[in-house]
Length: 204
Image (cartoon, rainbow, N blue to C red; front, top):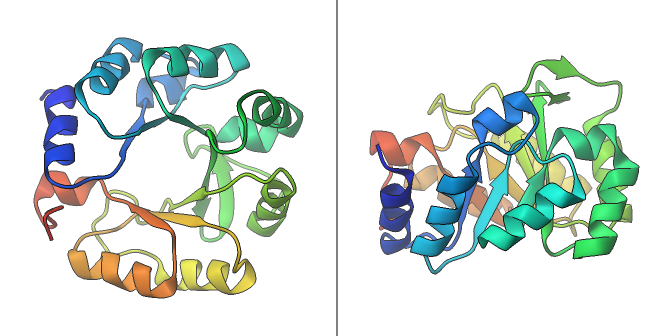
């Protein structure tokens, strides 16, 4: 029941980064769980990245002041590319990660509630121009379902964008899933529910 204890457990089990999504923030479009985020940053010695509810440069500065190492920009990156560009110019591309959520290959925004009139490929092309890497790509259909990752999606992205660092997210249920993604050549994997359900152990 304690996010801080969970983060410490993940670190002691071998995680090299803690990925946090402020779900309340994502829904309310503002930072909400800042106290918990700060407590996690103070408790672990590995990098922490946070997404959810980030809308302004001031929001990013607030998170960095709390000890966050990187921020994940989702809907805003897609809806307001000029603001994203300003964020990158102020904080550098190494501290800004773009998170793209897709459903059947179609990008979604606003906590997965809205579709947009732009393709995944167009979004990735825009991120390349801004020199933003890596890109977190989440398959909505598989996220939290423990049904295995969408290997075809990531294979296609690696084929079409060989120089782009892709972080796979959604559906990971076993150590073999991680090995399969590694074989494809993704740069990292976000693991969530599988750790809580104990179908996968970080020590593996």
